[in-house]
Image (cartoon, rainbow, N blue to C red; front, side):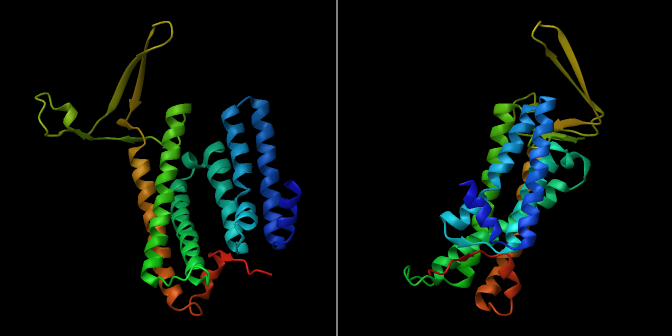
Length: 267
């Protein structure tokens, strides 16, 4: 299999091959450093990244679909930016809107993939269907949003099972909840201008631990999840609109060919 992967990237553009080898080298170096540090969660993320790097190869060889070099490079950079830079190097915390940028790109790219899958079927002589451009663009949009939702399920699952924080928590200064209504009515009670929150817990020896959260209340990932889905919506919507015009006039919008996979021609 590894021989096939090497042959696959040798057949790609020199730029794609160079970026693949360089990023793979950085991932392996990062994994070795994390093994030395004994940070096994980060080691797992490095292994996961290397596995995800098989996506272009699997799409090409198993699905017989040709990925444009531009899309191939974007996928490699996106995975590296999300897992290695975002999670391990904490770019999510260091660089403002890093997560927002990645989820917007994800919405755009997944819409491109969704459109290509329907377009391949649409143009296949064996399938015999002829879907309208508006229907193809709607399916592309729905495909992208579905991938975005599944990713949020993935983050939530890992946060709950491994005590991670892939759904980044945030500090909020006000809350509104019916749970705070002492009369049990379905009327939310609002607490504004929260200065700090104190959490009392106990350790294994039943010793009292007090944790102070300054400047507000800790939101446990809801804001992050909704923001991710919103920007995924924007990316998916933008490409779906472009995809609609692309299906109607492929020559005028030929620049989108850099993002849309194509079915390989049978030799």
